[in-house]
Amino acid sequence: MAEDTTVLLEEKRVFKPNYKIVEEAHIKNWEAELEKGKNIEKYWAEKAKELEWFQKWDKVLDDSNKPFYKWFTNGKINMTYNAVDRWIHTSKRNQVAILYVNERGDEEKLTYYELYRQVNKMANALKSLGIKKGDVVALYMPMCPEAIITMLACAKIGAPHTVIYSGLSVGALVERVNDAKAKIIVTADGTYRRGKIIELKKIVDEAILRCPTVQTTVILEHTGIPIELSDISGKEVLFDSIIEGEDDKCEPEIMDSEDPLFILYTSGTTGKPKGVVHTTGGYMVGVSTTTKLVFDIHDDDIFWCTADIGWITGHSYIVYGPLLVGTTTVVYEGAPDYPDPGVWWKIIEEHGITKFYTAPTAIRHLMRFGDKYPRLYDLSTLKILGSVGEPINPEAWIWYYKNIGREKCPIMDTWWQTETGMHLISPLPVTPLKPGSVTKPLPGIEAEIVDKNGKPVPPGKGGHLVIKTPWPAMLRTLYKDEKRYIETYWENIPGGVYTTGDMARMDEDGYIWIQGRSDDVLNIAGHRIGTAEVESAFVSHPAVAEAAVIGKSDPVKGEVIKAFLILKKGYSLNTALIGDLKKHVRHELGPVAVIGEMVQVDKLPKTRSGKIMRRILRAKEEGLELGDTSTLEE
Ligand code: PRX
Image (tube, rainbow, N blue to C red; front, side, top):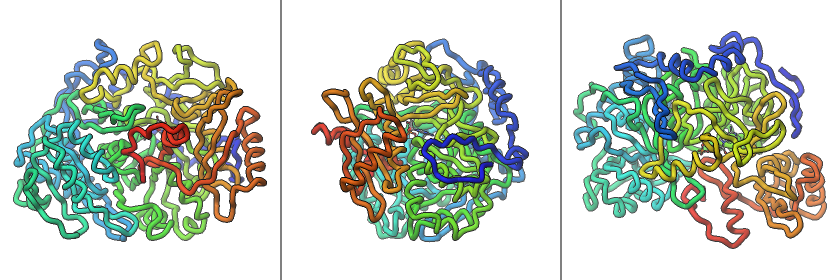
C-alpha cells in the first residue's frame, strides 16, 4: 500500500490490498467473481443455497410482467428463521448476536439464543395483540436491542414493519403511519442524544390523535423517564408487560419468497414520501451475500455499522445482513461526538471491532477535530472500513484510510439506495481502490452510464447511472402506488432499465465515479459538472470545512456556481479568501467551474442521514416553497 498519504484532490494513486486481506478473503479473485456474476440467474441461485428454504423455488427470476420482477418464485422461507433460529443449533448459539452500546457508556449483550427467546416472546405478544400475517406494524424506536427484536418478531409472523426514523417529527410520523395503515405503533419513552433525552412517547401522543388505523401503542421503558399511559386514542401497553408470560417458542410463518417483508419511506422529488416495498426471499439473498462478501465476514468478526435502523442502511447492514451471516452486530445509541469526538474510536478499541461502516459526512465531521482523538485509541483490530450515502471526497477518504484504518484497511465505498435494498456498486476487499470511486458493479449486477436516450456514453463523460438487469433485493413497487413506481424508475430512460436518479462517469479502467443526484448536476455553459465534485474541490482548500453548491442562473452561461461554505476556525470569507478559493476551485476543476457567488454559513440544511439538501438551498435562493422538509435535520 502507498506510504505517502498527503492529501491531494486529484488522487491518482491506486490502493491495493495487503496480503493479509487477500489471504483471508472469501473472494480472492475479483475478476473471476465478476465473470461468474455474468450468468445472473446461476450466480444468485448459488448464493440462495446458503439460506435455509422450507421449499425450494421454481424459477430464480420471473420477468414475465416487467417491471414487476419476481425472484425465487414459489420458494418458501422465513427471514427470522434464517437470521436467528438456525444459529441456535450451531456453535453460534452462545455467540453475541447484538452488542448494544450507548453514549452514556451503558452496554448490553444478547447471544443468539437469548435473542431467539426474546424474539419469540415478542412475536407471540404481537399475535396476542391481534396482529396477523400481512398487518403492518410501525416502529418509532431508539437504537436499542428491543427495536431489532420487534423487527425480527414482525418478520417471524409475517407482519411487514415500517420503521420510522426516531428523529422525524410528528407530521412525518402521521403521514407514514397512515399511508401504511399500521395497526400498532411500537415506541419508547425516549432516546439518548448528545447528553439529552428525546421524548419519543410525547411525539407519538401527539401523532396518534391523527392516526385512526392504530389500535394499540406499545411503549418500551428505555430511559426510565416518567410516562403516563392513557387510553384516549387506543390501547397503550408497556413492552415488558406484553412479553411477560409469553411463550419463548414461536413457529415461523411460512412466507412466500414474494411476500412483503417491510415498507420503508424515503423522500422523492415531490413532497410525498415514497413507500418502498421490499419482499422476502430475494432481499434475504441480496443482503446476506453482500454483507458476507463486501465486508468479508468470518466467525470472529464484530461488525459495526453506524447508521440508524430507521434507514435502509440500518435495515440491511445492522439488522438483517449481519444476522443472516451469523456475525455480531453493534447497535450504538447516541451522537458520534458525545461525550467527546473520540467516542467511536473508544468503542472500537473496547470491543475489538473488526469491520466498521459509516458515512462520509461523519468522517468529515470527525476530521475537523484532527487526529488527536483517533490517536488516543488502539484501532488495530480493524480490518475493513466502509463508506455509504454520498460520494466520499478524496480528502476524507485519505483521512479515514490513514487515521482510522492505519493504512492497512481497504475502504469499501458502497453505492446503493433505499430502493436497491443491497449494495450494487462496490469494491470487494481485494479490489484495487481509487479514492472517491465506487469501483465496479458487484458480481451479478449490470450497470451502465447512458445519455437521456439510453445510449451509453463514452468513458470520461458524465451520464445517467442505470441498472440494466434486475437484482434480488430490488424494490418490488411503491406502496399502493404502482404508477409512481413505473414512472419514477422505469420510464425516465428508454430501454427497460432501472433509473437510479444519479449521475456518474466511468474512467478508462471501467471504474465508476458517482457525481451526485441528477437534479444536483450543474450545467455551466453547456458543460456538465457535479455539485459533489465542486464541493470536493472546495473542501480540499485548507480554509473550508464543509461546502454545498447549487446552480445559480446566469444570463450568459446558463448556470454558475453558488457555494455555501462552512469555514474552519480562524477564517472568514474576506476578499482575499474569495479570490484564493476561486483560483483553487478553478485550478482543481478547470475553467468550467465558474463561481458566481460564495457565502459563509454556520450550518447546512441536511437530512438526518447527513445528506445536504441542496433542494432547500435552491428553493430559498429562488424564493420558492421549501416542499417536503420532513427529513431535514433541524
Ligand atoms: O445519490 C446516491 C447516494 O445516496 C442515494 C441513495 O440514498 P438513500 O436511498 O437515502 O440510501 C442511502 C444509503 C444507501 C443514491 O442515489 N449514495 C449512496 N451511496 C453512495 C452514494 N453516492 C455516492 N457514493 C456512494 N457510496
